[in-house]
Image (tube, rainbow, N blue to C red; front, side, top):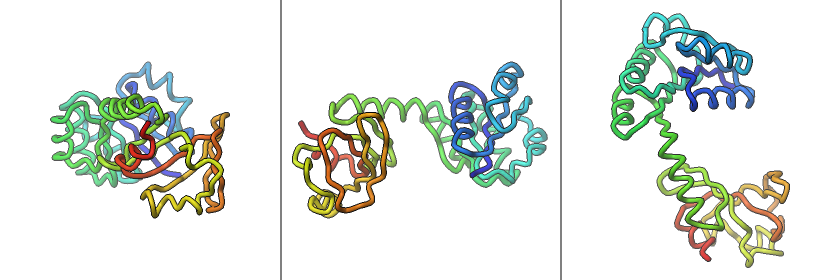
Length: 215
């Protein structure tokens, strides 16, 4: 369990805070909008109202004690000010939301430890998913690597993971199986036998995945 501070309760910040809390993390959500905080206060660990572009307000939160701090502010100047304040206050790990490549560059200059780019990442994920009908979901790990949900290739059906030697021959890691009801089960046994009625979760290079799922 991590202690997490989410600054900004817009569309992205709101869903992030709720999801983090549901996953067992302690989440403090802050925003200057009293109505939004009142609506969400029962869905997170704690919530406070205030202007967190102010150094004193951030200082009062004890930001150095949080494992992760997410800055989910869309306004360019405000997010830069908050990131700068957080780093000067000794925040351990600051993840900031960017709305453009310029915004991303300046957030890095302000000291953000990581950048989230929801619109770009969502667009890229959709492009991957809808450009290949055999890919059903996708998580980008880097420019070249990702985690993919795909159909079991016909040549894999009835064969075991050990027999196929996927990691050595294809350079891919098979992580899990997903049945028709959406239940995901980790694949740990090398003798696991694949069937046509399942999807598999595979991690690897985009070019290797493209070859595997080529129509």
